[in-house]
Image (cartoon, rainbow, N blue to C red; front, side):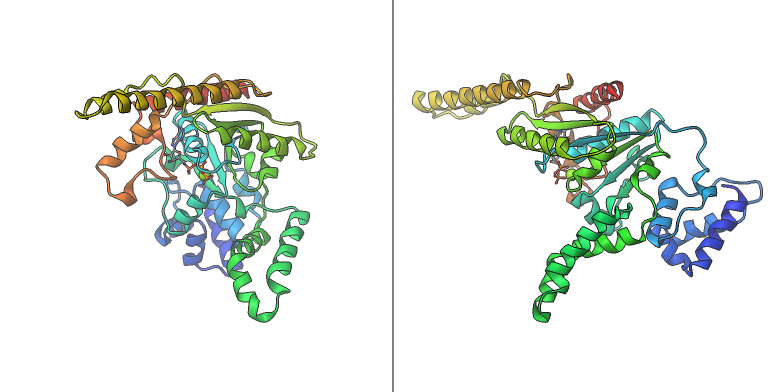
Length: 374
Ligand SMILES: Nc1ncnc2c1ncn2[C@@H]1O[C@H](COP(=O)(O)OP(=O)(O)OP(=O)(O)O)[C@@H](O)[C@H]1O
Ligand SMILES: [Mg+2]
């Protein structure tokens, strides 16, 4: 970063009366790092803020990013927006998103993830993030609450707070504040935001929307949506259909994104012989119990086949990359020698923790297929 920008950064910070400590906090860095950004280097330009750090600082301070900083990036980013989504929780939206994003970073693309994920928020507020030097550390993560809301959205949120907190009798307000605390914080942060998602997209090759709540954001901005269909869960089909129906119902001037189903946890045919091995270890099983166990395995296999056929009969195309449950083995292997808190989490990617695993291979194939569909 040139000295003029370092001077500008300091000037903007000082005129907004923001201390270095607060600026550093808003940019998610330590004070020493922030100081180094404001230190003039002459011809040496090695330490410079990431796009994400600058963006977070300006957004969270409610200051419009000066043009000089916006123009810093060289080359024209591709500006493509993808979302791996569905209504059902806990089906792997976030881990698959981060692994695909990391794979693109590995291929030298500029990649961001915009998220409203609860685990991301919890970990970020504890100061946790990707480990240094990993591919995941080169992804820029953005909290959706730091993006500008439309006046209508802001009005709706404020009304909800009035109805459920401010307008309640005084003795009930405290409980309202607890229940609606997240919304109050969202409004506070959104009031400060100066950029919306379209502005952010101009600085990246690929932006992933890891979004659970604000599906309007997906409809308005995504070019491609992969909808997760867990082949081990009948309700994930219903949830995917409901998600797609809601997405289609949102009125929007932008052309609709392309939709594809993404089959996960695929083990149709039940080829694993786990049950036989398990049963073989038990010496005293009589034929009747053995028969019962085999029948229940057969029932499972038929159930999986039925779910798979229902998935294939859906009225939207399915990606040909089918994900298996091999991520479980890769993650278990990674976690084996680690303490609970150091185990696989939101900020890990398979490309970092198990690059030669079967699961990482699936992610590479999925990434290639998604990018080719754009
Ligand atoms: N390739 C994968 N396919 C399916 N699940 C995966 C994959 N990789 C990791 N997972 C697993 O997905 C599980 C669910 O993750 P997580 O709860 O973050 O999903 P999510 O859909 O983002 O949930 P939420 O709705 O809470 O945001 C985790 O236990 C993780 O191990
Ligand atoms: Mg998630």
